[in-house]
Length: 322
Image (cartoon, rainbow, N blue to C red):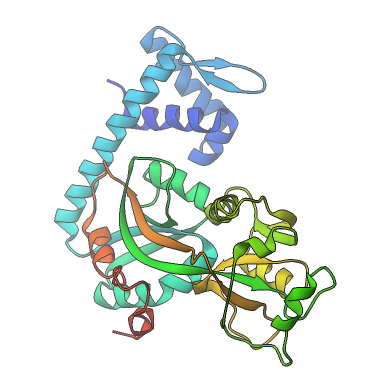
């Protein structure tokens, strides 16, 4: 009989393509991990991996083992979680994933309501890039993750949170690279709120553009919007932080697009925000792997989410303490 722990070991080696990295992730000594896998392979009568100095690759048998082991572990972990749910009632653990900036704006009031209602449930928060969070959600590391549509895979079940507008962020003061016809946008003192003026995204086709780095879903959203308008942005800076992008824009390094939720609300050096004629939006959802058991702790968290049908308009009241 093959032990569950050995299946986890094999999956870790396949995930990291390295015995050393897999051992680190499992808190095992690398020689011990190698020895246990050799014993498993001896019992099976064939190797599961090709060992290469630079990379470890599954054999044909290894690929079959990995596929079956993944399915078995899903059933095993779901059974364990379901039994725990019945035994613990309202206690347990909820593992949430979220991008740091979006999560920082959305989750605190939500978690406050949740922890007041279910104080016995321990909440574990994982902050990663959206790309990494999709991977963690797919692997069942997180029970639920806050992500923006569209998602790459079809293996997710999603629960809408809100749909919000995307706005243009411009420098706080007129910059030398700006077209002359932008000068009327800069009265003194500059406005600190979203202006009533509406412009088309095409006006940014030839100016410096600030983008998020690869691995951030909002980057692809921006690139798709620009492509729909017939241009590729002239990338001046790339950053992993939407607040850094806004600060760069505010200080005259270029323009960027920003979800309304994360607009900087002064005081200080803030961008000039304008609505776009295209009226772009992004939709945030809670995502989970749809073939996994949905714990009671996760179901209760989903039930407490903001009303997804109001476009985020009731977030202010949602933020009030219960």
